[in-house]
Image (cartoon, rainbow, N blue to C red; front, side, top):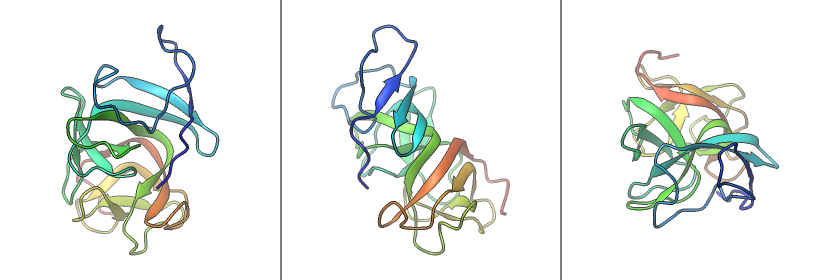
Length: 172
């Protein structure tokens, strides 16, 4: 999924002026792990992202579990538990990049019915992907579909995030 490559960025932190790219993967760490920033996208609006270390096979739009203390990520699978973010680039092992935690972004989703307006999402057996809720204990709180499956591009659904978390409590 192609994301816009020139997203303006706003921050009250000194030393960060001008524009940053939300979709860039860094081969060396450029920001503190866990740092959060707000980006403005002309299509999707304001996005809050967190800077984290990548993991093997991560693609743009993949859902990852992240460790807020260590700043590391793991692609989600069925029965994952913990805070979740969306990779904004193909941020593989030993690289660094931004992961969306709030706002609307395209998410890698399975085609089986994903994308009904206002539908909740859940983890699936396919690493990094989400599907519609329905399997007990796999719901992801804080994720809601805003478009039909393949709306923004093949295999993606526009999803609204608000600090998503997989806690295994709800099946609806």
